[in-house]
Image (cartoon, rainbow, N blue to C red; front, side, top):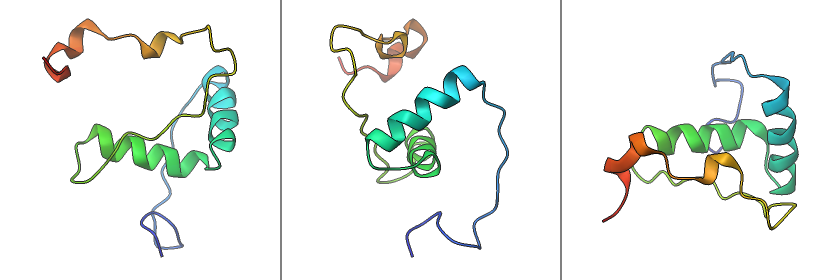
Length: 82
């Protein structure tokens, strides 16, 4: 059974606003995944676990729109490739 799936995985509780949760749920469905799987993948990537990759996002519904989260953040300058 893949990691994170099954009765032996501890249940975690998080507070997430509806204006984030609702579009996140739509995006995970559009990418043929689910909230738990994408959250696990992101957390593993963020924690720099071996072999972890940033989850692939579904195409934007409005190709001309770039969400704020896609812009480079100044505090992450050390993570950018030079």
